[in-house]
Image (cartoon, rainbow, N blue to C red; front, top):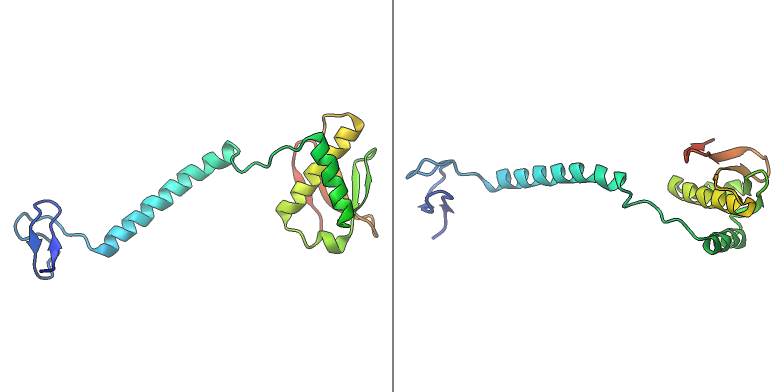
Length: 152
């Protein structure tokens, strides 16, 4: 027959009423329901996302010593890493290739290169400076506190 059904008294409503004629309950439209569902989803997402960040669900995994050495060799083969000075914690890259990476990729590369330098020197402290091979200008630093600083 068509028509809306009252949620409270379960009677079928005919016509375009915003309320039930038998019990007086307000009838919500479909757009109001969708709006409420969207609001609830947004609230859930915003309440859960800080927990994901805090407890490290998106944290990158720490590589083993073998994986770090393999990673550095792969960077050299792909000509991303031109030279690495483990004594001074400096890595030299091609500016053209380096500029193709997104910031999160640059962070991952620098973190792994810092781990490589610390491993080679037998230290626990990870830090590194990424420099342009031609100009020797600093492009990125990863310090002892785990903070990144980008240079233009």
